[in-house]
Image 1 (cartoon, rainbow, N blue to C red):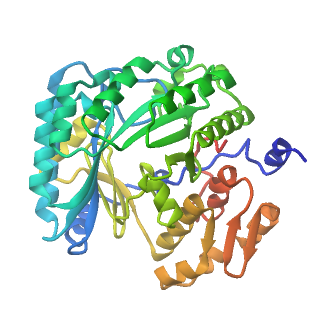
Image 2: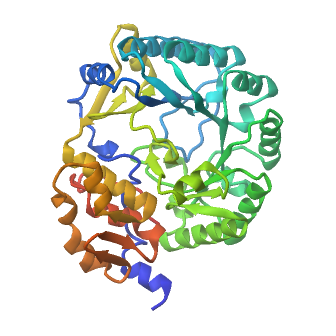
Image 3: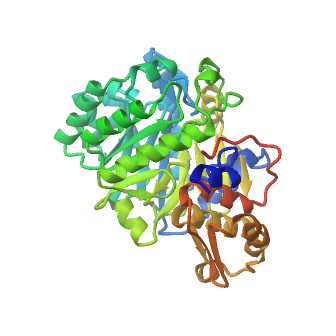
Length: 451
């Protein structure tokens, strides 16, 4: 049986499943969670507990058609200035509720385009955070960089305020592909950005690439990989394009007839992954790659790889505070999301209310299943002894899907009394197998392609 035939039989090419950057997933967030939940969770964070912060900057000068993030286009400074005022107020509200002793270990600015901020605005936001919530001595501060909206002054401001890691979205360097997804970002512009970052002693650099885009070919994706590799990023994320026009209406501008089918998507990924591995990048989970000396590769080898809304991470903090429109927080008892529309978000904050509008309160079973799914996505195996060490509850919810797992995947999954391990087609099957353990109703949601 060929690989294609076997993967087809296993349902890989037709399967749709969550990416499981959280469990329960965001489609199951409800409006029963609101400002009171957020206030209570902040007040009850463990004393001396390190947390992570995510700051959402929703603005872009141009809106790329492929993007499903919560963003809005602007070429005017006034909406950005007003939004920054709101961020500062929300940060102060959060700080007022936090127990003394809570420190920040990781900070990530995402978007949108954080580098749409001016140097003065960068200083203001970073200084507000530093003054509001104490940071650990080795805090990691990462920023998503748009190479078309960066200059030496902005990089200087970011470095002066503590940036230690930069992330650049590449997606694809082929001109035909960029035209089909409404993007303009040349290799030369990206190379200049990387040089500026390296000159500023930013030695931790991530890059994102997309496969499954219109007009991608074997030759074009390998050329993009070569160009990215020449820039020597420390980590590379190789994401599958999620065509979800029912969620991101701008994706309707992309011609669906130009999108590759599931089998072609998987072939493109495998070509790109093999090329990266030949370039001495270590495969991480289902879609990440890192240099052998990068903390992510080390975390993988030590069994400490984690997964959150940014994908794979070395972030060992259990709690994440999301700040800004649409930002999601992870607290001891569940997830909560801020209002997505920036005007409504700002109105709530300036009324003195936490802008939380939906979320989910997690049960003990939810916490257990979340850990199982994280193990599957990070390690491709589940060790029952680790679960019993971490959770003092019955493992029955973990055992319930085992019959289905054995029935459907006996040739590719090794099952023992101590747990189970995916032994073949790990990257292809991880999300599908994780979905077997998902206790929430799967029939009311539409997910992206697994391939």
